[in-house]
Image (cartoon, rainbow, N blue to C red):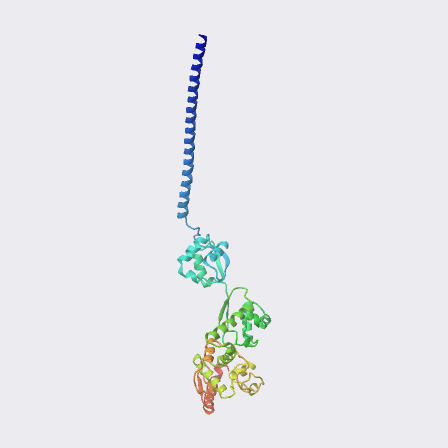
Length: 377
């Protein structure tokens, strides 16, 4: 009996234990399921938040506009646009100077303005905090450029040009002359033989603040070379053409006479005649008035075309393009003489022989006698 009860008791206990273990496993599985579900919900929520923020970021980026100021700006600032600067470079320069609110706004405004491609390098006066559109307009307005301008007239000599360059650069004339001695640095061609006379092309030039005499003369010489090249003048002929052109420049009063006067010069050279030009005497002895004296015409110098045949050793003034063109393409004439008979209108008469020329000179003398008081000569 005892063994039977004991065996029964053991069986009942085992069943209860297995039942309890099954309940625990089911509870564990439920807890795991709940945990996994909770984690999934959290991850889904996080993922949704990231996606939402990403979408909002795209929307914000796509709908935003570049920062820009509203008005024409205030205060003053100088900006430097470098040669070859791109639109992005200009935008960065203006942004760094506080002119514009953002580079993007300037680029957009420049793209909207077809004239923006003509913005040139240089120094500009601008305002701070300008609307990008106004900044573009300001760079297109020449009045906002800080430039140093010089106008070199035709027919003047080196001494006059040196004075003008000194005034432009704030240098002394001696400083300009010193810079002129370094002809290699100036780019003066070898055929000029170290003499700048006639090689400083007369024109109007603009320079940035702080320009030096060397920079001015370098640009003027380069322009002379360019004009000569444009007319097909070979390097070995440059000095000769400039010399003839300088004579034309000093003798002609009207553009229409330049080719004719050039023809007279070449005709006399071909005939082995002295040129006999008062302009070369005036180069040696500068004076006012039309006439030269016997004493001046006897100055012993190779520049004196009354004493020596052929062209003078070099140019006697700075010829302009019209005179250079005349020296390259003279008129085809048989004239050997010319004289301006009306100093007010520039009327000039030509002759093939000396007696006709003398008659023309008499007309000049008559005109001069009638107008000397009013002309001041």
